[in-house]
Structure formats: C-alpha cells, structure tokens
Length: 261
Image 1: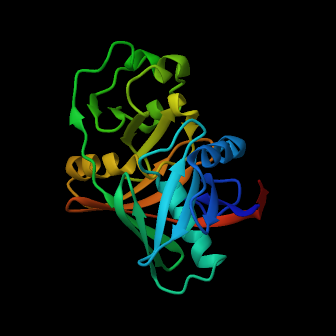
Image 2: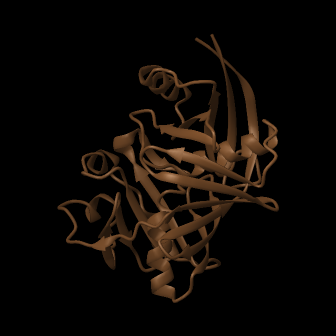
C-alpha cells in the first residue's frame, strides 16, 4: 500500500523557514494506530491527514505523541498542497474537523487565510514552578485557555527565554505560550509543548487563537501583525472577527513522495 506524502513549510515563503508539516491525502481513513506511527516516523510537530467529503475535506492532525485538537500550520500547509499540487480550483477550502469544528482556508493573493475559533484565555494564578521554568524575569500576566499564556514586558525577554523542558512537560496543558509587544510588529511569541513531543514549535497557528483576542483587546485594534521568534521564525497576519480569528500566512513546498506500508 502506498500513500502520498508532501512536506511544506508554513508561515514563510522561504525554504527552511517557518514550520514544516507533513501532509498525507487519503482515499479513506487509516487506522488511528497507523496514522500515529506515521506521525512518529515523520517526527514533525504535526502530520495532517485529510479525506475528501461532500463539502470539502475531513482533516485530522497528529503530533509524535497523540492526535491534537487544532493545528494551524498543518492546516495552512494542507491547503497549500491542495491549491498548488492537487489541483483544487475554488478559492476557499472547507475542512471538517472532529475537535475544532468547521474551518476554512481562503487563497488570498500570495497568502492563505484561515478562519479559526477565537479562544480567549482567562487570568489565573500560575502553577508552582511554571514561571521559574521559563525565565528569571517574572511575567506581567499569566492566563490559560488550552495552553498557559505568559505575558512579558519586551521582545528581548521573549528571545532570552531558555526553558526547562522537563518541568514544562509536567504541566497540565498541551503547552506554554510566551508573548510580548514586538519591536517591528504588534506582538511576538514563542510556544513550548514538550509533553506533546514538541520542545519548541517553530510557528503555531493554534496559539494565535489565544493571542489574537488578547492583543486585540490590549492594543485596541482588530488587525495585527505578528512574528513567532523561533530559530526558523514565522510571520502571521491576524484579525479578530467576533468569536472567530483570521490567521494569514504564506507557505512553500519542500518535498513530495510516497509512503510504503
């Protein structure tokens, strides 16, 4: 049995930048165990699998550890492959997901715009050891949605963070977001999810479901420009639209081939 596989770098227009994702178009779902093994073998932050249905495509995402509830960069990469490699002709792709509901991706010039749920985080008392596992600088605020969200004073503080991944892996969320105002953009961020097999994710679309409502309220505007400050770096154009967020970025294809099972 052969399965097509593609790799694309999302939230960038340059190879070896942004966040790499593997994409496997399927005729029908494979057993979950096999999809998980493929994700482990690929060893990317996420591998996306999709199956065509009547309105578009059913979509699922797997980290090397487990199936995830929502993944931005692998959704953007999947849309990019459909538009550029698989002959998709309409301007909007409809994805049906079990854990995140209906998602769309629209081709918008040289960018792809994802319509995702807004997930505002709420202020909490941080768990013991969380802030200390990130930096000797104390965060200005600590919030939580799916992930912990820690707000710092400056972009330099975000760049300087050197996490204790063992401690972070024991936290009771998927991951930890750190963010601050940007020097050249509205805000910057980084994302750590060692418990999901992702020590630092290069660019994370799903975290912006938290970041966009937070920074829209903080800065008093709904359209925002952001960088994720990983070694590979990613660029995102964002908009808060009611209870939804629009996340736009570019993508580039790196690889196409076949898996033999």
